[in-house]
Amino acid sequence: MANGKLTKSTVDGLEPRPSDYVQWCGQLPGFGIRVRPSGSKSFIVQYRIGGRNSPTRKVTVGTYGKLTVEQAREAAKAILAKAELGEDVASDRAKRRAELTVAQLCDEYLAEGCDRKKASTIATDTGRIERHIKPLLGRKRVSEVTRGDVEKFMRDVAKGATATDEKTRKFGRAIVTGGKGTATRTVRLLGGIFTYAVDRGYIETNPRLGVKVYADGKGERFLSASEIEKLGETLRLAETDGLPWQFNDGAKAKHRPVNAENQREKLCPHAIAAIRLLLLTGCRAGEILNLKWKDIDFDRGFINLPDSKTGSKPVLIGAPALQILATLPRIADNPYVIVGSKPKEPRSDLKRPWARVTAHAGLPDLRLHDLRHSYASIGAASGMGLTIVGKLLGHASPATTARYSHFADDPLRRASDNIAGQIAAALGGSKAGAEIIPITGKAGSNG
Image 1 (spheres, rainbow, N blue to C red):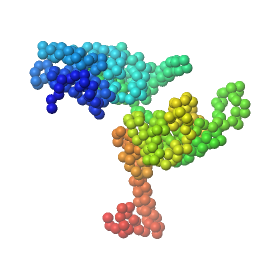
Image 2: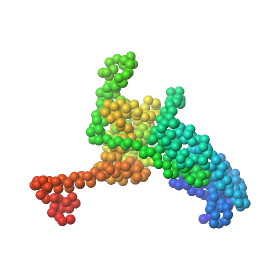
Image 3: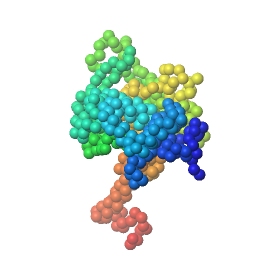
């Protein structure tokens, strides 16, 4: 069925889909509106210069809401008329865009190229743009940036060229240290920004291509059984007798409480519960801290996360985690499970209690996110398969779960030990080794 004329009612009725799509006008060929998964809508014009075999060109006319349908239609007619006369509006715009500075391109990217990103990711990108990209590359023309410029940018960030420590609010500070990890992540963002520029025809090639970034150096940490025991003992002590105070050797005596050496501190039960839940569920810290009571399904053993790194998802949790949630005190008028000092708000972070716990447990290098890695490693080593582990963690891609594959080799290692043990016993002449039993067959088989 042919599309009808684009009208306000038609455009208002267009619903977002998992991927971009275009609704074309049935009255003015080449005029349409693009609908993105986020729900944003923008008018576009498509045309050819030089006949049927020439490539199509697309021009964005403007955003619906800033332009009415009729205003966009008139602008589209003007562009199509120029195309008939051989004037390539898209090419002309691309040439002008190539003269943008990197700073201007970054601003446009944040405004128009982040439709599919979460707000938290955009905030992180903005910080990297303002703290690293703009200071070092912001004044360069987009068309002038080379692979060598990107490589130098990465080295400069790694060396701390953009490091700063400044006051941001009345009691706030922005501490930027640089380093190889920051350099790698910022260069990847820069590559995405230049990909945006290529897709829109501003430049032909991405100067990020071919640049070898530093290894992430994530240093993933996995708790051993004995370390989990230490962590458990510390958490139990923190909620019962309390953890003993610790002081720096250089601390002045006048700043210490009276009888400080004999004093102990009990940690907030909600903070302790949060740490236990992180290890027992494999969830991310933000998912537990922002968990609401209404999102817990005690009957079916699920927590329903309305928003996570990979979008909304249900998380299956075991009986121990459900027991923690069932016994955790609820604070009146506060919808959050892990509460802080502010009414009706969640606890903002676990930095202080986590530092106290890891210091007492003798695990100073342990990060909160390592609890998620430990949950995954235990699951992989149990022989349940990486597919199951990935589903429990909510990974969007199997490649993300593949980092735990070396734990999944454990059944093979046990089989190898079994075979070698039987052979060694036979070589040693023990009675137990007189008959070697195949792992997958019956005794005495010739398989």
